[in-house]
Image 1 (cartoon, one colour):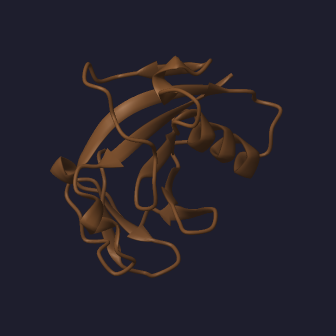
Image 2 (cartoon, helix red, strand yellow; image 1 turned 90 degrees about the vertical axis):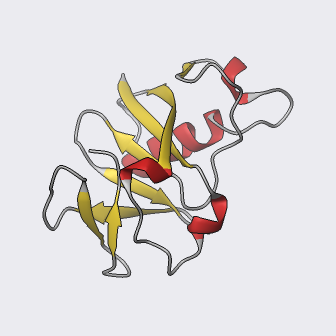
Length: 125
C-alpha cells in the first residue's frame, strides 16, 4: 500500500490559478489515505482525491482514510495538495487532474516551483 497525505488550503481563495505563492501555514494536514500499489500514479491520486470527498456521507468514514484533525474537514478541492509518502512527490489538485510540483530547491519553509506555471509554491516540508 502507498500512503498519500492530503493537505488542504486553509483559505480556498488562495486556490486561484495565479496564487501559488503560499506558505507552510496556509495548509492543514487533514488525512492520510492508503492506496493500492498496483495502480498507476494518476489512478492512485484519483483514489486519494475521491476518498477525501463527501458524497453520501462524510469522507472520514471512507475505507482506507485516516482523518488527522479532530474537527470535521471539507472535501478536497482545487488548490489542495496530495503528497506521496513513498516518493516524496507533491501534486496540486487542478481543475482537471493533478499537477506535479517539481522541486527546484527546498528550504526550511518548503520552497518548490510549480511544474506547469513555473511559479513558486510554499508547501509543508
